[in-house]
Image 1 (cartoon, rainbow, N blue to C red):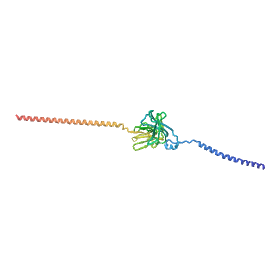
Image 2 (cartoon, helix red, strand yellow; image 1 turned 30 degrees about the vertical axis):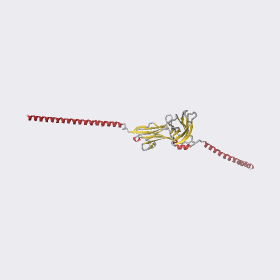
Image 3 (cartoon, one colour; image 1 turned 135 degrees about the horizontal axis):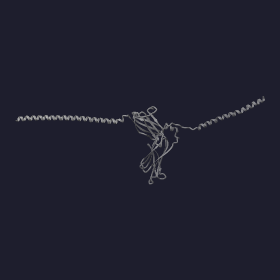
Image 4 (cartoon, helix red, strand yellow; image 1 turned 45 degrees about the vertical axis):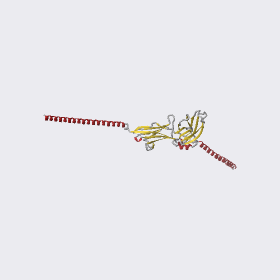
Amino acid sequence: MRGSGAVQLQLLLLLAFWSPAVAQTSETSIPSENISEKTTEISTPTTLEFSSTAGPSSIMETFGEAETLPSLNDKIIIQGFPKVTQTKSITLESPAELELMCSLVISDSTNTTKMETVWNSGNATFNPETIRRNETHSKWCTRYTIKVRSEDQMGNYTCVYKTTPEIKATFLLQVPQVHVKSKHIISYVGDTVVFTCEVGNGTTHFNPSFWIWYSNNGSGEVVINSTLMPEKYSFIQTHANTTKLKIFDTSELDTSSYWCKAVFLLGESKGEVSLKVLTYLTPLKPFLVIAAEVIILVALIFIYEVFSKKKEANTEVEKEFEQIETLKSEDSNGMENSTTRHRNV
């Protein structure tokens, strides 16, 4: 009994010693697993996604003011002193940080060492500065940097040199322009026509956010929806920079002006196509007019001939009547002379 009691006492002491260690081990293992999970969540990259049809405001809200804009620069070199106003177009497809520079080339004989300049945009005047010749004493350069983020920042930016007269150079900021393949199309009733618009050229392509087609028949703009009228209209877009509108079974009611509009983050541009739908009788109209003129002319000639012949006949009858009257008159005169002679004898 004593032996069994000692064994039980040892087992109890062993269990009492082992239980806190197990509890401590289990408590410390739980936080370590949580830390591992949190680390994994933080290291996972976040991807911002937005559709191509999102407007400029939504995209600006997504990226915020901290967005890093691509840097672009352009310049106008003004040769001569003075020089007439120069203009240069700059195409912007998306927001960018743009540095504009005007460089006025001067001759060594010009004694001016400094010059006042300002920049204009619309009715606003900004960035006035006093500039000096460059290191080679051959140019006056003035710069202006703008972060173009919205459509209202597009337009004209003009550098003005305060000379007499003033010298100006203008940068025209614009979105890519739409080019129409055929501006005037003539079709016949029942035909199918295709209009094609694109932005860019053979070497440079611009991708608008989306395209819009609409027509104007004089009563206002009507947006074309191929989903509502699939039997009449169809959109074809093989590339982002190109759009095509197909019109089936044309009628005279389809005669109108059509516009393709390319929408960009910084604005929109559009191109116009005019459609004239003719009936198959239309080409015959000139022939019918000519035929009618010929018929009228022949009729007039015929009437003239009839009238002329009738007049000639009347003239002959009158002549015959006059001849008869003349003969009668002569006969009467002969008889009177004969009677007179007999009486004298």
